[in-house]
Image (cartoon, rainbow, N blue to C red; front, side):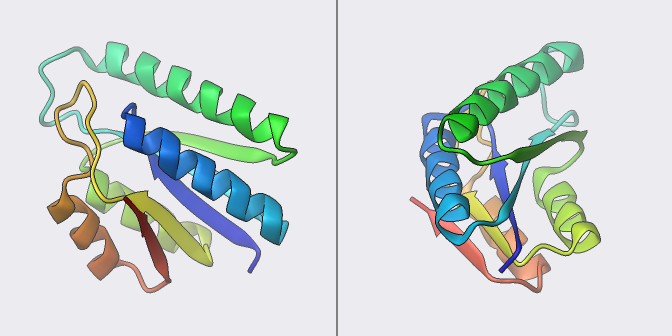
Length: 131
């Protein structure tokens, strides 16, 4: 295993998911890529504000990873979370995807159980769902 992808949002669940991914990447000595998706179709707040939240979330994630000796590659995209995560996973050739079973963020529910299941069904690699 060489490349792991983890999807996060701003929820407490995402912190748990992120910590799990960082520890796994460290244990396996893998590349770790983190994706944050702004669901701009369903938001009530401005997209620039949500992009700012994404940047701050990924900055904190990167700081935690650095403390553990793990280098992180970060990406923020706009669109439907399940579609964008699946596209990213397919395009980058990951060996494993780590997601949360559900999440809560300023964009309502980011990882609803249904969203997690859509992601699982749309990728061809193993998926770990952290709850």
